[in-house]
Image (cartoon, rainbow, N blue to C red):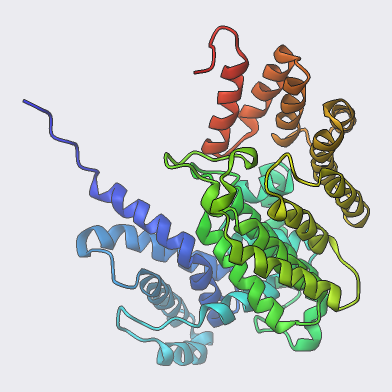
Length: 425
């Protein structure tokens, strides 16, 4: 007799469903609670309590039709219970309680306004730009501390301390949890753009998990980018960032195979790229030039993405133009990652020997010691030079540094392909 398939435990299914809801609705829930309580830390605590309540109630009563609204309503009630126990906050309790809808389909504050408001609050000038980004990514992007640490190439403990200090600084500075006036936008815009860019980056190439992409994160970053362009239409870098995200997002349909594995740029079917997204991205880049204030780092990155978007193949790409653009980017926003990307472009334009010299200098500096990027690129260059054993060692070094299972599988396949004991195929 054939064994019947084992059903997934209800608790596990609910936990997975809650995780999916939180990835989509978490920023909205926290933004709404922050505007009500005036305290980011309290908003996070209330949201986590609501999630714990969901794990208890949903297996019994079923998942509500509007789970995000349900979480917000439960969190609001928890806030009211806490304020009820504090006589000094009785007046505030009455105000919040009067606005609370008791139905399970309670209306949420518009996501755009709420999320952008929280983003601008988190990017208050009292915080350093790294602290702004770290705090905002955990609140708006819904990223874990480990994911944020990987984005910044720092240890998890360092990132934990940075986020805690950021919250304490906002509290000590008595930062008002209200949307800043338009004249305050400019001083916060650098941090806001950086956060949106990092949210998109995590969606485009997740640092953790099993999926090659997280479209909901990337789509949210694109939505925020469009809203920012509408808010500050004469800021070139807002248009530059939108151009970059549009051009990069055009590849989404071709970046994942039918079996869920990632498809590298050289192997992608360019006929599946979204031509409308490419046209909109190029239009946004033209708008940067029309403003007449020069291209900033995001616009230069968009120009690099444009070269890929207009090329019929990897071989026909204008790699010398891309090398030049990376040199410009290195002057505007120098970083080891930019230099590593320049090395990749140099390898395509002039061959792997010159590129390997760049990578070796970066390795000697040690600035990318905790990142899988450098050993991965080094492995590719060594393989192209026929130095198979060294290439296999480089890829093997990168594997434990990769948090994303799909990306790790790609590297593992490369190692196997270079191992004479396990011939490819």
